[in-house]
Length: 115
Image: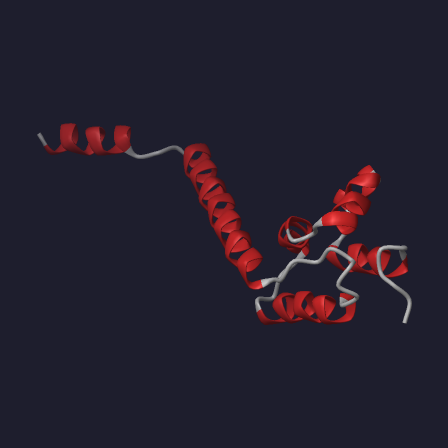
């Protein structure tokens, strides 16, 4: 009877591939909700506010505080509006840039007024 019970338990145990897939899904789900929460902490930037410096400081603060890697692109791009959003969509490579490089490109672009 014990052998049969052990066999049933073993049959119900997920395979290594299933376990890894479930872990990857959980990480992706967590990353999505994490970036969604970060998005709520970052103000919008539309380039007409003349306040890129403060907005970039917010981005840097969130990246440092939450030890973020390049997933920061998600909340950054979702907070762009107006001219800034049009600029972001003007070149397909913008979506592939790291958060640091994206901020540098924005700084060099015409969407950030010169001081």
